[in-house]
Image (cartoon, rainbow, N blue to C red; front, side, top):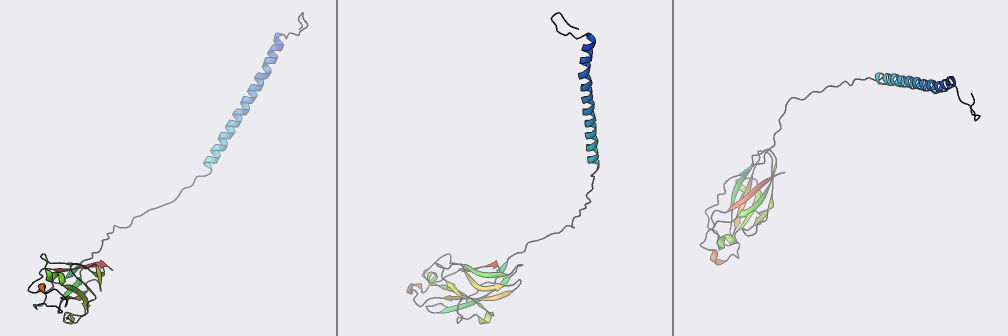
Amino acid sequence: MKTTRGRHTASPAERRRHRAVPTVRLRARALVLAAASTLLAVVLATTAAGGTYALLNSSAATSSATIASGTATMTVSALALPAVPLYPGLVIAAPVTVTNTGDVPLAVTRSSLLAPAVTSTLSDSLTIGLAVVDSSAACTSAVIPSTSGTFASAPSTAVGLTLAKAQSRTVCVLIALPAGAPSVSQSSSAANFSVVLIGVQA
């Protein structure tokens, strides 16, 4: 159909045909997309169902158990000095028995020398030595001490003794008044002093 101006005007039937073309194409695209979605779903379902595995495992506990720590303990017998008046140049000796009463070997160290509660010129002049001997009978004034000190100066030092579990050894305590001790130290006494020994796990 033509208008008065020479333009073609579509008839109603032609307009219907033109509108029908894109409608058919849209439907075709929709079907293709729907088919693709279905295919994707099938592929995913197949992939998920194709790899199912089980991990076999088991566990068990040991029966209950207990562990206990050992102890480091040591005893020292009483120091009994001979009843001999001390004078400059004299050395007196007395044995003590050191026993390892713990569960581990112990290295014995002289930790300190504790002065009498009431000090005097005599106590300030004394030299205390220690030596490891084979027996109480071997503890004499002739023994050479392995370590010695005074109440004023007695740094911690090893005695040279290691005790196995339940082992006992004799330590000789040697007390000397130097030849150059002041004369005012005479007619004096030094009571209740101590030699401190410690045992450290060897």
